Amino acid sequence: MSDLPLRLASLVLLLSLSACAAPPRHHAPPPPSAAPAPSTLLLVSIDGLRADALGRGDTPHLDRLAAGGVRAQWMRPSYPVLTFPNHYTLVTGLRPDHHGIVHNSMNDAALGRFVVADSDAGRVPGWWQGVPLWTSAERAGIATGVWAWPGVTAPRDGVMPRDWHRFDAGVPLEARVERIAGWLGTSGRPPPGLLAVYLENVDGAGHDHGPDAPETRAAIRAADAMVGALLARLEAAGLAERTNVLVVSDHGMAEVPEGHYLAVEDMASMEEAEVVSIGQVVGLVPRSGHEAQVTARLVGRHAHYQCWNKAAIPARLQYGSHPRVPPIVCQMDEGWNALPRATVDRRNASGTHDRGAHGYDPDSPAMRAVFIADGPAFGDGVVLPPFDNVDVYPLLARLLGIAPQPNDGDPRTLLPALRQP
Ligand code: AMP
Ligand code: ZN
Ligand code: ZN
Image (cartoon, rainbow, N blue to C red; front, side, top):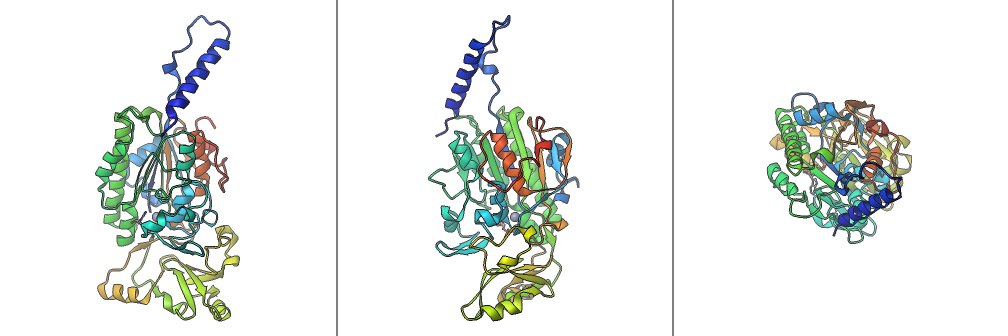
C-alpha cells in the first residue's frame, strides 16, 4: 500500500540529477545509500500519566529520554479533560469543540449515541471530524502503525493505517511490544514512518487506587518498561538512530476523597432533563417545556459544581460551539463526581469507590500532562515552559514532513525543542 519505495526512488533520482548539474568535483558524489534514510516517528501516549510522575524513580526510560532530549514542565490538556477528546486533539491539533469528540459520551442528531465502550460507534467515521495524523501520513505515502489510539478504527475515505490494532486491555503489554515489533518492516516492507501507541494501564490504576497509590506507581513502572522495550525493538531493527520519540499523556489524575460523590438525579430530575454525560463534566438537555426552570435552577455556582449555558462557557475553555455540546454543561469541582444514584448507592454499600479521576479544570496542577521528546530532530536537555496540547500536532506534521491540516495549534511553541528550528 505504501508509496515509500517510490518516494525513495525519486529522492535518489533527484540527488543524482542535482549531482549532474553541480560543478565538477574532485570527489565522487556520495553513493545513493548515503542519502538520509527516512526517519520513524514513535508517538506513545500513557493515558493518565500526570506530569509530576516523572523523576520519582518509577520512570527510568522516560527520564533518560527527557534528560537527553526535551521535556515540558507540563502540557495543558484541552477541555473537557477526558481521554477520547484529548487523544483526538493530539493527532489533529483541533480542540474537542472543533473535532467533534466533545466528550467520552455524547449524542449527535444524525449519528445517535457515542460512548467509549461502544466499539461499533467508534468505527463510524462521522463522529471523528478533522483528519488524523495517520491518514495524512498514509496519503503522503508514509506507512503508519497505530495501536489502539482513539479514532483508529474509523476509516477516513477508506484510508486506514497500514498496520493497526483495536483497543484490547486483555493483551499483556509484552505481547503488544511483540505485535508492534512485527510492524517494523523486517520482512521486506519499509519501516513505518509513524508509530502511534496508546497505553491505558496507568489511567485504570489511577482511577481504581488514586494517583499516588503503590498500584498506580507499579502501573507507571510497567508503562515505562514498555517504552523501554519498544525502544529496544527499534534498536534491534536498526531504526533507533533515526527514530524521533515522543511520549505524551492526555491528562493527569486527581485524588478523589472518600464520599465525594453526588447523585446526578439531585442535579436535575430525569423528568426535567436528559443526562447526556455523567462523571466530572455533566451534560444535560432540558426536556421540552422544562427549559426555563431547569436552566434557572442549574446555571450558576453550587456547592460542588458549576453549570453554564453552552453559549456562556468561559472563553478560556474553548468549548461550547459544537452542536454535540449539550445546552447545559456542569463542571464538577476537583475530586467530585456525579453518578447515577444507583451507582452511588452500590458503591457506598460495597465500599468500592474510585480513588482517582480527571475531567477537571485544565489549569489544575493535578490535570497536567506529560510531554517528552528525544531523537535526531531534538535538542539536548531542553526544558520547555508549559504549552497547550493542540501545539503538538504541528510538530508531528513537521517531523513527518507533511503539510499540517488546518488546526488550533501554534507551530511556533515547540520550535525551541528542535535541534534546527
Ligand atoms: P476515561 O478514563 O473515562 O477518560 O477513559 C479511559 C479509559 O477507557 C481507559 O482507561 C481504557 O480502559 C478505556 N478505553 C480506552 N480506549 C478505549 C477504546 N477504544 N474502547 C474501549 N475502552 C477504551
Ligand atoms: Zn485519559
Ligand atoms: Zn481515565
